Length: 525
Image (cartoon, rainbow, N blue to C red; front, top):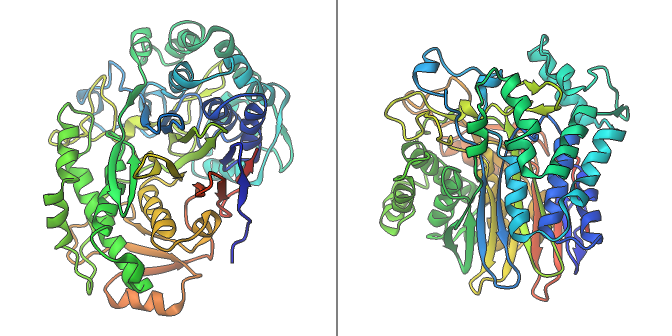
């Protein structure tokens, strides 16, 4: 039984993990905006009211679907390593916090890249809700306070909340005002992209980071708009993030699952197969993914029919295989989606990487920097080796599913670091294989396969930890243990993701689902 009802709409809607952000996006739709306008408004408000997960100093990725011509494009709003980010600079390792943990912020550039191409309303109108919340205040939620307390428990001397103007003693419902961030948003609304990358804000970023970011680093940044990775699953087309995002793992999982009859499998066999497919996807990811000229060709080989066929034969239904090494990834991210009455839709994810990113905000701007530079490798043999101007491999992954004729079927995604591609595969299978509606697919019990920090696949027989929500029955849990999985039951809705999902019905009606595991909300227009 679903904890929430599906939301149905004919004219569009927004789903995000923060009700004020959803409301802002919907208000822009109501004022004549389209899906992209609504998405930018939602994105900006999330940076204000959910600063631990995403910010103006972070990154974004998206997939856009055009209702008119039934095409999709991928937007890569990640940032490059600055000019000083060399291997020799980090002989002692990349710091977790501080401005030297950051790449060039890509979110604001992403706003203008999609707005210039598809937006309808003036950017001043689109950013007005975010400016209002920053200037006049917004109520603190239990989720935000939990984030603040968690950060302070680990880093009691952190200066980031003073820099952000967030009081650490705020209580639930207490009003937070962010005048510095309101100034930055106003500068962007008035001056456009140049404020962030060339003039007023850029100058403050350069000064605050003692030149770690130069004006040239910021001015050189560009958002990439390109073709998504695509693969057929059953009779549907999955559109996923191309490199350096790890969308390749999602497609690898699904291409393997497409070779078997998932629907007729027992629950034990279905979970086992998808977990084993996940392990294969990550094995290929770490050998392949980076921001090199040859990366796209390497990814194409991984997703090719011969390679998938070889990998399929490695899955044994009776036994869990050894888990591959995984890099510990930040999981402080937020996902949302928007659709309009013309059939346009956008699947959008944004992040500062780890909680409160670099724990460094640019004085006088209220802008929190990401710590995405820690996503690079310092191994000279890695395809993800750090270098100036290069973008690190990313967990951020949003997707869209279309019918074979190009018409829209599903829009979805989730936060959750390396859990993202695992969750996305489960959601797609829930809808396509198990024929669930949007809210059923989101509510259904989920699993997540983890490699804890410090654990190594070099340990013979190590399979990783398979966490299952306790709503799975005892037979499923014991059945997976009998196959050699190290199984751990977690709370009934304890899965570390916050899925938003849009399903388009045959008559064109939008059906939205929003994850009860978070404070989120879906609203139709």
